Amino acid sequence: MKEFIKKFIPSFLIGWYHFLLAFFGALFYRFPGEKMIIIGVTGTKGKSTVVDFCHRIFQEAGFKTASLSSARFKIGLKERPNMLKMTMPGRFHIQKFLREALDNNCQYAILEVTSEGILQHRHRFIDFKTVIFTNLAPEHIERHGSFENYRKAKLKLFKATDKIHIINADDKNAEHFLQFPSEKKYLYCLKNKKQEIRIFDKDLKVIKEIKDIGIKLKLLGDFNIYNALASLCLGISEGINLPSCKATLEKVEQIPGRMEIVIKEPFKVIVDYAHTPDALEQVYQSLKGKRLIGLLGSAGGGRDKWKRPKMGEIAAAYCSHIILSNEDPYDEDPEKILEEVFFGISTLKSKKRKVKVFKILDRKEAIKKALKLAEEGDTVVITGKGCEPWMCLANGEKAPWDDRQIVREEFERLISKKK
Image (cartoon, rainbow, N blue to C red; front, side, top):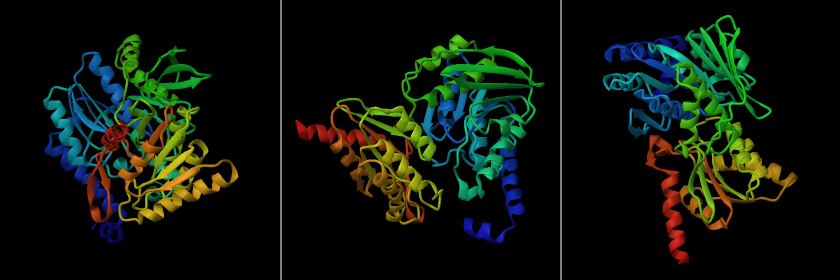
């Protein structure tokens, strides 16, 4: 049905269809997005972590807060997993969530905002006070037609919001996000490993500089420092003092499905959502120095086929063992997907280093194999799905799934057999 609509209905009519859905969703739920302080987080990577960090900062400061991410829906202390397999749900879902948050006396709502969501006007009729840009790397290229179009979709959120902009100054796309006027701009960066935040007024004059912030996270990876800096900017912008914000983030031990350590001994097993080349490399870099066993695949449904050999090449550069397995094949041939990832592995492997590769379509069997290969001190890295609750198969079928649960179950079986 969706393909029929795309093929035979002019794009401007489809745009109006999505716009009207957004309007009627907001109307039905009495425009809750105009009655709270709303924060939008956009970018390629780090959105869910920033949403989680910001929720914790506001909660610790005594504000009742709601947040919506690809991982979960949270209102105050109550949370439920995001079972929709959508980072940014449809218009009626979002407006219903915001109404629920408002009815529960939430003062803040923090939302992940995606390029697809922007194209479909899901951000409409929500009065964003603050928007946060984390970073940008190629993704959803088939959907948008080019990286430039993907970036343009993200920029629309900043164009539509003129109060507070928070921007990762180290990202090479930052200048595009800086072009739009706002009452205040918060720029964060890492210069020579020194964490800095600069605050500008609407005339781009520096109001304040905070140098060498020195936040020390329990989470792995420099990318989480960037996520933390974005969240600190938001806290400061809402009048929460820096020491309180830092103390909150320095207590965080895990983010669901984001560099989540599922098994600690005798070897580590880490589950992460990384599903783009840039994200995958950052995960591996943060674990450099360990013997890595990587389990990965690639989403189907015609999504970003260009990235498959690149991800294989990256895995071959860091891992001693690679296990290729199903991720979300949708209607594509799963074996063909793995062959496209394997092409990148074989290209690098023949030139630089020896890597042992296994192709196991059954992801449960693949996880079992990874655990059997692991020796004391090794790190098993399972990427692509994070804490997602489903695996998407052919003909719209969805099978219940959780990488973390499977890891725990198979690890227990492995340990019991050794006893």
